[in-house]
Length: 173
Image (cartoon, rainbow, N blue to C red; front, side, top):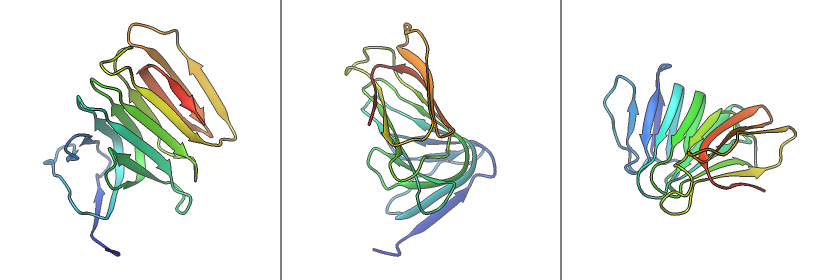
């Protein structure tokens, strides 16, 4: 119940990895740990934040915060959101299934540059996809020719870049 448990981690400018299956977090050079029952979790000052997918379907959402400028929220597989500040970039490495990366600018454009590395075209369950939600003043789409690893390219929305590899569909709303 509110106000609930709080946990804030300042990574000191190094990288960190979150395991999509277990939810464990490893800050480079430190021991990994898993949180449970933390209602207010924040992660800051990370050079590169990597979400490591597993063989199951993983759904990762990056959403902008309309209240605090420069803060975004990361949700992995329906777990409680993680507040992000001062993150250099986010990399979601999908693995072995129909993974989904949702870039949600419904309330505010996320500020963290992101990359989604999907599986090769026609993955086990049909493919990985990038979903873009919200309205944007500026949109740039760069597509590479489809290759053996699927569709590759990048999208820039209101100045925030999203790179992608190995996707099948890209849907926008």
